[in-house]
Every structure is written in structure tokens, then in C-alpha cells.
Image (tube, rainbow, N blue to C red; front, side, top):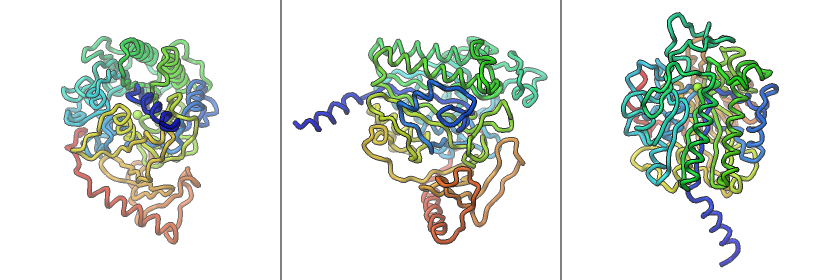
Amino acid sequence: MTIAFLTVFATALANANPNIVIIFCDDLGYGDLGCYGSPTIRTPHLDQMADEGLRFTDFYVGASVCTPSRAALLTGRYPIRNGMCSNGRRVLFPESKGGLPDAEITIAEGLRDVGYATMHVGKWHLGIHEGSRPTDQGFDHSFGIPYSNDMDPREGIKHREHAGSQAPPGDGWNIPLIRDNRIVERPADQATLTKRYTEESVKFIRSQAKAENPFFLYLAHTMPHVPLFASPEFHGKSRAGRYGDTVEEIDWSTGQILNTLSELGIAEKTLVFFTSDNGPWLVMNDEGGSAGPLREGKASTWEGGMRVPAIAWWPGTIQPARTPIVANAMDLFTTSLKLGGAEPPSDRVIDGRDLTGLLEGESLPPRTPFFYYHGRELFACRLGPWKVHFQTRPSFGGKPGTTKHDPPLLFHLPRDPSEKRLRPLEGVGEKALAEIEEAVAKHRQTLRPGEPQLE
Ligand code: MG
């Protein structure tokens, strides 16, 4: 046997059934981490994670708001396919009757089937009824809140006045904290959520390391979604106000998780992926984040709504680098299942691609179109450097209403990430538009919209 063969064999063995940790923030913008250019928010642990890992410059989420974005991540499918998006109610509310259909297969279900221990910590927002809850969707255990932290307001609590304020009342929202379908605290003490999520995650990692069992941890932070709360150790410490305080606490939390993995000697057997569910909630002003150079934010299909920070870390396997590859959260479904030794389901369309070659530095994924949906409607498409908008809408809080574009708007994203300079639809522009229109037509042929869950 050659040394090269032995090396490949040894790498394959080392990479069999790695632990997988996905850290998913809420409303964290593209420009809110030090390593993504924030001038004021200090994120030393995430900056180090980025220095040691793979930092994506062009990573997208499957939707520009919470519920559909989470559905896309966990199922590897555009939310239109499973009904987890709507043109009316954009997300699930406490009184909603729907949720992630039981028939959907999540990362947790795929990995549990091949022997992984699975745990959800943090915000869920994929349904509170039987069939849709974390423990119905592949998680052995769950600890967190069922929907957004600004839902379930107490009497007299107003959204902009209180949730988006610099001094939100601690008991303003009657959010339950739930462990395995049992309410353990109500209202949840939001100031200590990030800290408690971290302790819960570390405890789970320690117990699984001891059991020598592969594990999947889905840590979905409640912050920095308004109302903003941080632990006493972080409250009032950031130069960027309450918003910065919560992001700096999430940075601390990520450091705790990476340090625990290193201390236990399992860092080289663990893929950690850090990202956000959608862009910043710009109308919240100081209490909302920043999309950096990108246009618009949460609830918009302009780049600021759907392009988010993303860092993959796996010492010994991932080489430190920055990648301009266009990837998205749905890819984490396919990649996680492949790494775990599970085959993605073949009885349904899966939109996520396998990124294992990219992570292991062997090959790049093929150029694939990315579709930007607003609710149930396709608004834009990116293919390679080109993005075409067929319709646009500003972020939440902007002038309401959809603008249809005929002819469509064309932008060259690497040269113009802020989408400010319209390209002419002639020459290369004409060719780019034709290719994108063909990709959209092909995509539409695969669509069988799921039964609406959010109405
Ligand atoms: Mg969100």
C-alpha cells in the first residue's frame, strides 16, 4: 500500500461519524462579528474560530425570516416544498395550528437513525403541536423556547415600544421555557437564556463524550432577536449597546463550546458550524444588527436579508481558509447526513448539496443556482456571480409592497455586493439572464408546493 493510500484511508477513518454541532443565531447580521467587519462588537472566540476554520463570504439561508429559515436548515428543502412559508403570516405564532409536518425528515432524524444522540437547545419555532415538536422531529432531548422571544406579550406590552426598546421589561413576555415538552419556567428569565443554553450544551457534549457516542447538537440561540437580554456579566459591556452585549455573550458561548471539545480531546472528531437564521432587523435601529455592506435586512430578498456570517470549524480536517463558494443552510442537511453515514431520502426533492468535499479540501461543489423566496413566491435567483431580481420588497419596516420588475434587475455580486449598480441586459448580461431564467424554469418543474402551515 502506498503512503498516499494510507493517508486517504486514515483521513476517511478519522472522519467517519464525526460529531456535528450547528450553532444558529437569530437575526444576526452579516456585519455583526469582528471577523465580518464589525467595528464595535468584540467577538474574539468567533474570530479565532474563523482563523482556524473555513469562513464563507457567500452563505445564504433558505428564507429571510425565522420559521421558514429553520425549516430549510433542518430539512434541506426550500420551505415552499413543505408548506413552512406564507405570503401572509411570515412565521408561526403561538396560536398557529400548523407546524413542521411529521412526514418531513430532519437532520436529527437522519442522524438518529444511524446511532447519533441528538439534542436541541434554544429556540424552536417550527410548531408546538404533536408531530412538529423537537422530540417528534428526531431530537432525543430538547431545552428551550417554542417560538420567538417577542411573542406572547403580557397585557399592555407593545412591540416597537417595548421589544425594540433600550429597556425592555424583563417580565414583558410570557414565554415558556420547555424541557422535553414540559414547561419548567414561565415567563422564561430571558437575561440568563444564553448562559443556560450554553451550560446545557456543554453538559450534553460532556455526557456524550463519556459515552463515546457520536452526537448532533442543534444550538439555536434566542438572541440577538429583540427584546435583547444579556447576563449580568455581559449587560452594558459592549460598545454597541444591548445588541452588542447579546452578540458578545454568544461569542463567549461559542468559545465555551469549542474549548470543551478541545479539552475533551474530541475537537478533531467534531464539525462545528456557526451561522444565523436571517439578516438583521434594521427597523429596530440600535437594537437591530448590521448587514455590513449588504443591501436591506431581515424579510427582504436583497442580500442583507439572506446572506449571513458562516464559519465551519473542524481541526485537522478543515484547513483555515476563506471561501467565496455560494453555499446555503440546506447544504448542512445533506452534508451532515453524508458525514454521519446516512443516505439523504430519495423519495422527495432535497435542495441541499453535499459539501463534504469542500470541508475536506478535496473538491468544490458544482455551480448551482440559489433561489430567493419571499413567502411562497420566488423573488430572485443567483447563479455564479450574477443575481436577478424578478420582484423586490424592502425589509420589515420599510415601505410596504412588492415591486415587480419587467425587465428584471441584474447585479454582479462579487463586484457589487451592495446591489447598487444595475447591469445592462445586453451582451454578458443578456446571457446571464437567459441562464438564470432557464435555471428558474427547471426549478419550477420540480415544485409541488406543500400544504400551507403558517396561515
Ligand atoms: Mg430570525
